[in-house]
Every structure is written in structure tokens, then in C-alpha cells.
Image 1 (cartoon, helix red, strand yellow):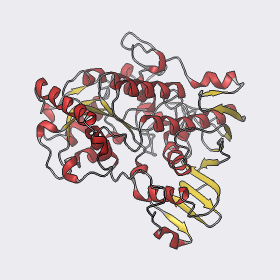
Image 2 (cartoon, rainbow, N blue to C red):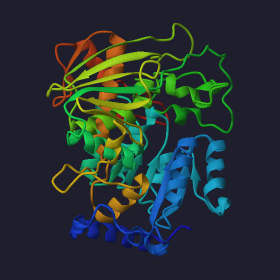
Image 3 (tube, rainbow, N blue to C red):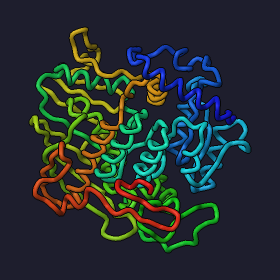
Image 4 (cartoon, rainbow, N blue to C red):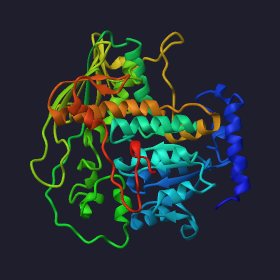
Length: 447
């Protein structure tokens, strides 16, 4: 499974030369044979993929990568939780005993046969691992949200751009045809003058405070915590909430600063900003309110309503799904379109619209992981590159700060600073934890 270093270096050189030789002129949708989707990729030309974080989210992504007809070869698995890592190895490799496994992602990044990584760890690890991967010259597919703070996100952007690696954000709804068509309808005025944009995303969760437990021998608890503050081990932090399935860390601010506003809502904000042509900027005013657990281990927002206002006068209204349908609704003077991967319109006949040659046509990706692999080969930007990942994540993080402070905030999306509000600006970053095993510098990067 592991190839000699000489072959790996040759493959990487070929990938870089392909980008430099003008393959950016290739079409966005390459034929299956060109992507290796039809089983045509020679073993020496396959993209070596390592996975960092091997839980349920990674397993979905790995199934998609494995479905690319031999274009990708799994080269290593990293997770500080031996149980979930070994389960992923068993599910995705024909010879589990020979697969490279580690608790420390730095060992995976040191491997010459790893060209790209899938980062599917809890939110508090995304930025540090993405920065480390970029510095190691690895292409990056990172699950959402990009970062836990806006300062971290900007540090990831700098690292990716300096390393000139391909980055794809895991907001995969963008690669669904209904999403693209809905956004094209809004961009081309098919529903008339835009009157309202409504986003609905799931609410948060509350839970009691369980007693601390001994750290199990199958877990490196220090590595799992990473840059987050030191905390006692409680199984609900890393595992499912009893009776609910969702992992507890989603709703603990040490691991997910904005809670479900960013953890889930980034999908929907990403779509809304794409449709409005605002995907490279951010709001200039944020106002909202939310409810929070009064006691217990979970401390992120439960219910919320937010208003994001942009410099061009557009507004996005975002609430939990108790107040708005899950997804994005665009209401215009001539009709309405709803999307969360599919498409629904009022009147229904609008759903048959397609753009003409003179209309705005958006980036057309048919497979999110396949688009990532295609862009590694061609040197193109993928459908959700790092700057757009940072912008959609930032909008959600701004919402988290607004509901936490409970007041209107003014934001400069160019400087990425709040105006005349030092208390809010202090929430743009945090001091990551350091330990004997892990020491973090600016932006959450490992020293």
C-alpha cells in the first residue's frame, strides 16, 4: 500500500507541473476517465489520502472518496480515540492490519506518501490541523466550520495561500445541483426583486453535568483536547448524547465557540451568501438574541434569531428551525425559491428555468470530493476554497458573538474588526492551551 519515496516525489512533481503547465484551462467538469472515476487511474498516479479524525463525519467523506473509481488511495488514519480509528480502518481498508495508524496527526503529516488530508475532527482542532497540513505541503479537505474564531480562520487562509495547496471546505451542499440552480435564479432575477432571505438551522442542546470519569486507555485525552482548555474527562464530551445521537462537543463552547449557529448553520449561510454574490465579504451589522442553558455541561446557544446586514443593503435573517424551515428561502417580488440541496419554487413552474448563455452561471461541481481531487490535478480553485470557507464561517461566528453579547454589532469585513467595541474584539481570538505534549502559537498553530 505504501509506495517508495522516489515514486511519491515524482507524483507530487507531476501534480505541480500539471498546474504550472496551464491545465487551469481545463473545463470545470472533467470526464470520468480524466478524474480516475472509471477505474482508469494508474496506481502511481493516485492521490494518497490521510484522514485526521475518523468518526462518523469522516466515514461519510471516506465513502465518497472511495467511490471515485481508484483516483484516491487511503494511506493513513489518525485519531486519538483508538476505538473509532480502528473501526474506520476496518470499514475502509481491505487489509486493516497493514494500514498506518496513529494517535498523533503530526506523524501522518510527516509521511511522504500522503498528498492530501481529510480533516474531520471536532471544531476546535480544525484550524491548527489545517495550518499544520498546509505547512507540510498537503492538500486539504476540511470539514465545516473552518475555524472556531475569526482570527484562526484568517490564519488558515494565510497558511493555505502561502503553501499554494488546494483547499476544499466541507460545505458539500454547494455541489448539489438544486443549490446551484436556486442561487442562479436569485442572481439572475428570476424571482424578481429580492424582498427577504430567511435561513433556518437546527437549535442547540442542553444537558446536565455528569460526574468526571477515569480516562479510558483507548483514548489520548490530552491530544483530543488539543488547544481547548484542560477539562475533566466525561464521555459525553466526545461521544453521543444519551438518547440523541449527536456528539456532546458540538454544544460546549470550549470546542465549538458559536455552537450550532456555526456548526450547522455554516451550510445555510454559505448558500445564502453565494446566491447574493456576497461570498467574498461579510455583514457590516449583526444583531440578534438567543437563549442559553442555565445549568449543565453544555453552554452554547439553544434558540436564536439573527439579522445580518450587508454594505449593499441586503439582509439575511437566520433563526433556529422552530421559527424557519431548515434551509434557505429567497422571497422575491415574482416568486419564491427554497433550497437545501434540492429546489422548490412558487410558482412551481419556475423550477424548470435554466440559465441562458447571457445569464450568470455559477461554478458547477457535481461531486464535492471529486471536485477536490480534480482541482489537485488541474491546479484550479475548488468550489469552496479557503477564503470563501473563512467568509461563511466568519458570518456564523459573528452571529455567535452577537447572541452572546446581546447587542447590535458593527463590523468591518475588510479589517475584520468590530467598530468601537473592544469587548467584542476580544472574542475574535482566544489563548490556546499549551501542555508538555502540545504547544500552540498565534492562530492556534502548533509551534
